[in-house]
Image (cartoon, rainbow, N blue to C red; front, side):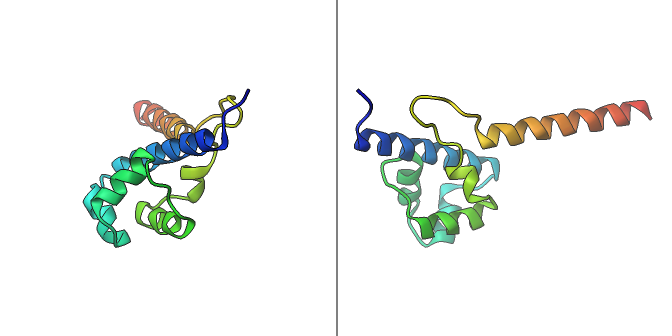
Length: 110
């Protein structure tokens, strides 16, 4: 039998929290800085990142503005029914690595 709604919601909250943490760290922002920008405590950011507290849509939109991210970077490509789909962030990382590689080849040819 499949996962219960509560288990599925918790798993999604954890995955979304991991994406929030990854984006925050990639931007070089502390939990404190993000919290101040959102008008919450850094403990609340910790709870979002652990997935123990769910993030509301208005807060998610504000968070995306602070992180300079599109909401789909956080909520997109969530896993459905145990089938993995590529992660948006990993796709962007691969594109950036490909671009860097092309630029290095151009520089080397000069």
